Image 1 (cartoon, rainbow, N blue to C red):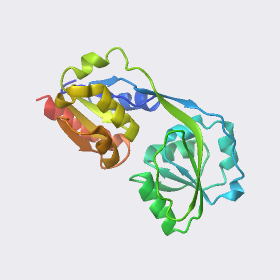
Image 2 (image 1 turned 120 degrees about the vertical axis):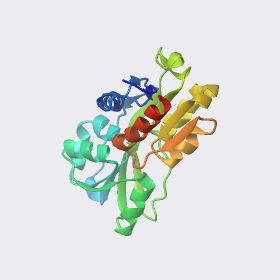
Image 3 (image 1 turned 180 degrees about the vertical axis):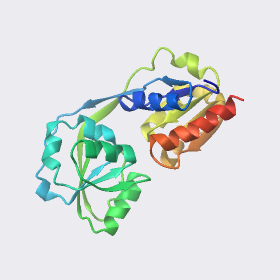
Length: 228
């Protein structure tokens, strides 16, 4: 493997999957999760009260538990291909896959006059404009910070590329990197995540799409550009 090391900070199982994909691209990927996801207790509402279900993370599908099956009649609107794939794997019907962020997907849902939306989400989440729709937020999982793994100080002490898969993740990476930002490059999943990372980085690249493939394409370019 050549080029700069790649630091993957997202929680499992996504983090391990990203490292595996990066390895197939010949990247020197290191799994340094800064968060851990866990299920929350929740009860599925009557699906007849809603027109559609919004999913913004595959974690919601993975951690929802048995009650998710009670919502199988609702058409799913998913942010990103990974979330859509997880929904289909759980037996849900995906009506639309957004290629940007949740706000763009909500805009598209508003254009279709979808009025009652159930958002199966995380405990910590961004705020979005439902464009007049009735948006019910139902947390079924949480993603909490964990101490950086033992190899973190060594990896950020030299030039490297980091992946920020969320706004919260970008902010925490920035906080933990500190002054080391000046020799680190960051690939952000969205413009909002890039903004949350702040200034002072050697470089910030924004993924074309909110998925692993697009982020790793950016990372591959930065790792090999920096490794020459």
